[in-house]
Length: 349
Image 1 (cartoon, one colour):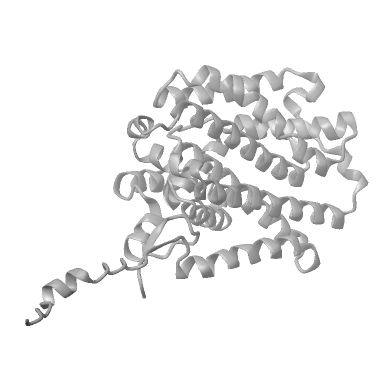
Image 2: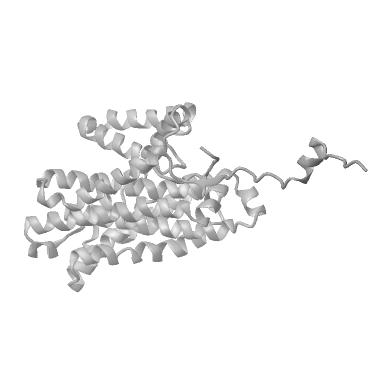
């Protein structure tokens, strides 16, 4: 009786199936592993500025930090939530005045008041969004400007806050110039951590996935279970808080506020320029745009009206021919994100 030897095909069928190659999901890239520690080191350097920088440099860094924070908040609104606002100056002015009132009228420490005053723009944002959320597109934008103008006119008629002449932060007289610089630098670094760092953490969360889906197509996002209305409301209130904090830090350093300055429409113009030129719908774009605007303001700001016209034309050209901004043009050619937001599939090797 002869035994039948198994053929190669039957032997292969008898073997267990090969395990699929291991695939992992990665967030960090080589560029983010370098850029993220550098960003944290920059924040630490700002905290330490009172020990190595002069007053002029500290004031410049505080101003730049405010621009970055304002741009990140506007980018969160327009770039992800689809809410184009031209009235962000309402939150800048309301928070600035709230800080001055807390410090001058109620004796609250000015640096503590700068943090507490963010409640005021949030309280303004809730009823404002209740009125504005029924509007779409340009009507929403015009509505935000109307809210800002109403706030400016109201403050201009109140003798309690100095009417049209404004207020001076008299409470800061109790601090030496060195203490003022220390507090301003620490507030600026904290502002960057909360706005830029908070935006990064938000975009890495499940809410960030919902915001990204809403940015790409709000109708499709809603069909997949994203509560677009609630998410837009939360983003609007959060952006109001971040914008207000930036305004408080700015006017804490300036030591004076007036309705014409606090509710100046140029605040929204600055946000639009920075985000549109840098790159809307990204974290890196507002950083690039803020650095560009800050440098241009220092070099050409003395030219006045022609300088603003050039900035407007540059924004228009970018909107027409490079809608993703400078960062978008760069990222098309070089895949080197600064922050680990995207999910990447990585196989063996």
